[in-house]
Image 1: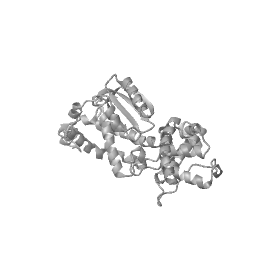
Image 2: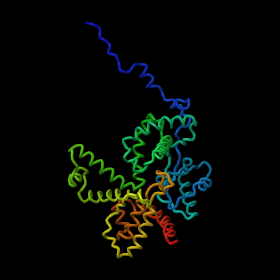
Image 3: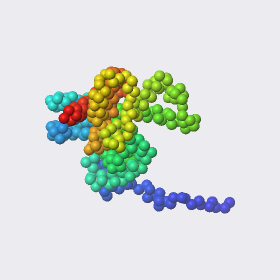
Image 4: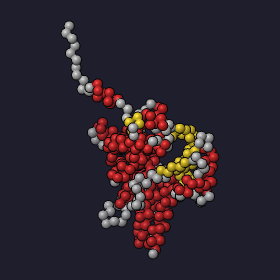
Length: 367
């Protein structure tokens, strides 16, 4: 029998060996870098507030060994301390905020949260790691770009957000679980992109829109046409009544997204408002209603000086809906809570932001 003729491999042994070599950042192999700042357990207190805290003053008042981070995108504060300190930190935070006339919202204490501080890693290692995974992350996010552009239309803002996400992943990555950092980062990026919509429009409403779009896309791929209302309800395992209610939530979100252009500029796009048949002009004079509507719209528009990933850089759609529909639409907050798929407490937080901006707007109009 003739000898078997060897089949050349498309990849040489040297190429495969190079591919298996560990990544090196700042002259330090990746695995060694994580070992220099291992992830450790700590106690954490999460909370939001009805008025933004003076962060520098808050940090200076914190007990020794306690740190705080603030997520401007969703307004969440995280206070970290030693294991066993969760209850004490929670009481301290509530007392400090109450002493300054600020109310905490959704305060929750956790024990044994495993995190690392990115600043504890060698600077050269962290810099090189970010430079390596920045372009990798942008390539990974290409499939989500239509969603991202709704919230981060400026490429510079997107680049900044990607690096913030990498640092967030560094803080959460547990090297002891034998999952490569790149794989962990890719998984987290998918979740955090979806959170952009949740933070801007409310978690339940954004999830409803995502599920409907996913179901419609799946049905079209299977049947090569859009589903009817009855078909979509069956496909999603819902009643037609539930689908109609959820569809109204999605329609409201899509209309409110036009607030991105509600800055009064000549090139602003047309404003789409919810059905106002329940808000006749007789409620108040037409001129007064127009004046107040304009002030409300301006109070909810994005702050042009804020980054897009900050709350102030996003249109306050939930606050606008709460004020407009309870003032002129004859709706209660309880009814809106059901229609928009969010809590009354969450609506109050966003409505309070509107109230502060609206007072300033009305003062300007009065002058």
